[in-house]
Figure (cartoon, one colour):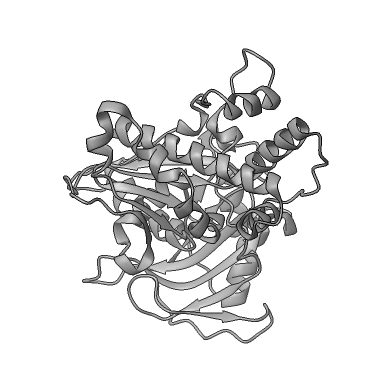
Length: 369
């Protein structure tokens, strides 16, 4: 089962979006009690949310005639640990904006099995039937959170992304698009270049970690007993950063004084602790190799999108690291790798927009059940 991105910042922020197509321009309110801009009433508006192990991003969304992109009427980010359940979060959102939609598109970490979402990183159980009853909804439609992010990439423009790798000689640009997100866990989805929206959900985060000989093998030996499966998810995530950091500290015989992924990445970017710097260097190298493998596996000529809040905070470090060299270092496949663009996207409302798009387009075609 796939766990999810976490952006390490955003919790408790409230946004009111301008009533235009696409993401709009956000105004951040300083507290939940601050007056909110009244929302235009619409009978077709519905809820869309992107829920991971750390944050729940909730929006009120509508589609307007003649507009290809969803209109996000209101948007809010909540820290999951502060609420007793998803129903409490949605009730808070609806009360704040004085709305009572009837439909809910829920992008969620994990997968739906026998009426419940299966994922060990979620703060509480998610049962669609119980949500319908508690929230007085006619329909709760669930898809994997990274499927939603992949659908959302169709609405990105150049101003929404930060390029990491710009091909010197572009290849075919209408091929598959791969979305990768290290956060609370490691998620991957693929948007296929069909005339109608089509997204492949994957469990690629659980692919076996390929550690190179030398220091990486030493760290791998500290991460798990010999002859044990260690996945990329185990290292390419917020919790994974801490695992790698502690393993390095054990190897060096020094105390592991950092116990928060945000503090670790801050120390690494500032260069204030050698173990933190090496941890993030290992992370970037493994991420480059992993993303390179996915590019080959899926023929991702449409590009790679790296989604996740904390990646936006380490772009400078990524650019100076071995990430790109590891991505390109694929033997005879290097010429293909050189044609694949890579972008960092701060997903924020992207999952909400993608879930909304799926509900009205992909789901109607039976794309995800």
